[in-house]
Image (cartoon, rainbow, N blue to C red; front, side, top):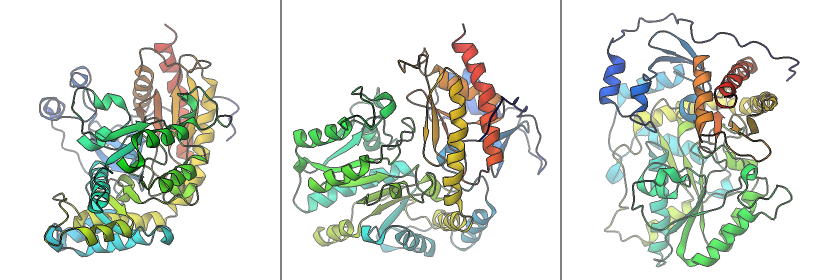
Length: 480
C-alpha cells in the first residue's frame, strides 16, 4: 500500500440515501432516553449526548434518522460477516417464517433447519476432532454458559465431582451471564455485582505488547504458559474441568497469540486431562482469514467450540455450542435415564435463526469471503501500520479482518493517554463525525473489524478517515 503523502479525508456523513421513506418520530431520541437501556453505556451518557439511531443498513453502509451515511467499520458488533441486510438471508428467514416461525426443541422435538445446520457444522471441522454435536443458542453468552455446565456435567457424571473449576485468561471476554462474567478476565466487568460464582480462575495471557512479566517476544520464556502450568499444579489438575480461551482475544484488546502458544496449551490440557473450550464467538466464520481461527495453528483440537456472531451475520440472534461426540456420548452413558439433561433456553435450536445460519454460511462459502478476509486483512494491517507516524499510535496488531490500534501517551513506556480510556473514546467520536463507525475497546485500543465483503477501496477510505481523525484526537488530549 503505497502512501507518499497524506490525502485529505473526504467529507462523510452528509449523503442522504434514496429508498423507502423513513417515518421520523420527532420524539424518538427522547423516548430512547426515557425508556430504553443500552448495554455498556453509562446512564448519564445519554443525558450528555443523544442516542445514535440507525434506521437502515445495506452492505457496508448504514444511515441514521437524518439520512446521514456511515461506513460500518465494525460489522455491527464484530458480527455482520456478509454485511447488512443480505438478500439471501432475508429470503431464507422470510421463507422459514411462512412455514414455521417457532416450535420448541425441548423433550426431543425438532425442526428441519436446526437439524440441517447441525449437520452442516459437523462437516466444517477437521474430522479427527469429532466435533459433531451442537445445540443452538441466542448468542455467545448463552453458548459459553452452556459449555461450562456441560464440562462440569461431563466430569461429575464420571464420579470426578471435584473437577469443576474453569480456567480463563486475563483480558479475555466470554459473556455477560454470571458464570461467563466470572470467566471474563476484564475486571471492570466484575465490579459491584459480587458475589460471582465460585470456581473461576484467571491466568496470564500472551499479551506481548504489554507483557505482565516485562519480557519481549520471541526472547521470552513464555511466562504466560508457565503461569498456566503453575496454576494447574497449585490448584490440582483433578479440580479443573476446562480451560476456555479465545484464539484471538477480542474485546480485551484484539490480541493474537504467538504461533507457539496454542500448540503448547493443547499439550498441557491433554497432559492434565482438562477440556479445551475455544471461544470463537468473534473469530469464527472467516473473521481471521480462516473459517475458524484455530485453523491457523495446526493440530489445535478443541474439545468444545463456542460460536455466535458470524454464524448468522447478526441477522437473527444465533449461537452454537459445539462439542466432541465423546462428551455427548459420555453424558448419555452415565446420565440416569429418568433424568434428562437439565439445561435449555426457550429459543434453543430456533428454526428461523437456524435458517438464517444456513443461508449465511452458504453466502460465506459461495462468495469466497474467507479468502477475501485473508487477503484484505493483510491490506488493512498494512494501511493501519502507516498510522504509526502519529505519536499516539503505539501498536498495530490483528489477524485477518480483526485489527486494532493501541493508543499511548508515551510510546517508549507504553503508557496510556490520561485520563485512561479517554483516547479510544475520543477517536471513535472523531471517526463517527467523519462517517465511520469503529469501536473503542479495553486496554486503550480502537478496534477495526469490517464485514468480510469489504474491498481495498473501502479499506483505503477507513485509513483516510483515521488519518484525519487521529490528529484531531491528539489535539484534544495531547496538545493541551
